[in-house]
Length: 298
Length: 225
View 1 (tube, each protein chain N blue to C red):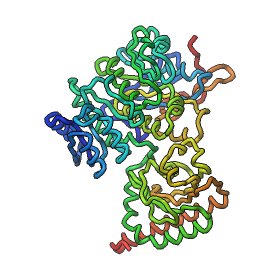
View 2: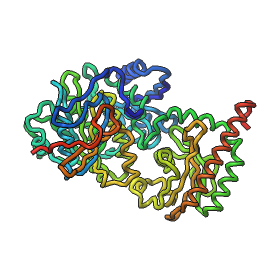
View 3: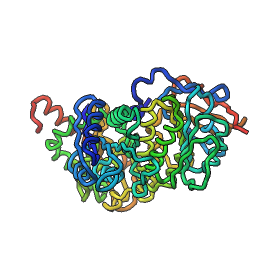
View 4: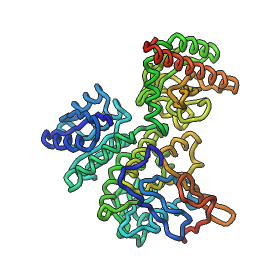
């Protein structure tokens, strides 16, 4: 297991003890970054992927809740643990009611053991994500990584498919994606849209879990997406997406159309979208096989 | 058990029992169960009984009550031992039920606070590292109070993961009629099984799915007086 842990504490000796505890508890390659306060922690999570943050509550320049908020801003899938001697009732959650943290009291007889066991399980099970994860997520992510190297080689073909879809549907944004472990990456698109999005901000991460073509006629009226600022800021109001399913059954991405107005999609339109998605998957698979045979990702 | 919630090693074959009054077979340690139904059908009552019925000596129970006061929680669990409650929305003058380990957060929207107070109450009622049953009543209230359902899902994902890692039993109530299909599907994701509750021709009934060794079909159960 590979894990990137952020350990935040203003007391260097105590921080070192925590680092030792974590390093001993997590098997495999563990990279621990240390920070003495909120600002250093914020810089760390803004500049590198983090799987889990373990933070003291009382910090020289703020509190552990500010660290938790920085985690949710920059590495939203990461777990966050308050490891502190501060009593439960003295932790102020007023400005962080929805960040969600684990709490382990420091100083009890089994505190270190409890922390180590908890962090190991958090890293292994990824239980602080704000979206559902497919059952075989590790297999799915491995399948995605098989197609990433051939994305450039497939670009021209995918570009033609998104052009056809944009013309057919008349939508403001048409795109094909790979869904990475923590992010959605647009391989090709017609229209304005962010090339990379945190997975929790995407509609596609939910489409991964559904059968057939996923349609949301009005995102602003849908209980699951009405509060999604990323969609609102992009001016996107409707969605139709189909999954890209690899030959071995893993959902590696999506083929989607979105519009700046609420709209419906007929059965015929859904069939066309599904066919375009299948063709996009075939194009990626063709490039993957060619690369495997020739050793050249072209 | 789903990958999202499959727990830590070392739980062995430990299981939670529910006694002869409830038509529910034993459930393995580390499992999380969604109890689906309306309050009219007796869902809350069933959840309370699943929390406390058939407990082994020293087995603790902790309820996150999103609606009630600590005093009302005290009445719900009158006479029960090793029971704790985290009340959401209870004020400092709300009082505590007799014999109850109680704590509170200001609002059901304080998901972070709920998790922290849950840690506190669990420490208070756990006996020698023994087993714990955890209840949340209800997820529907959380979805009403929290504007972004993604935050509720993060809370559920984290909470069920903690239950699994502890080798505890998680019991979460929800009113399925109050939510759209996609939200309901998202909520169901981290759970290992479901107990559906309804009022049949002969009274309240329940049906367990997703868990091995359970009765097949709808089973009658008796509501508490």
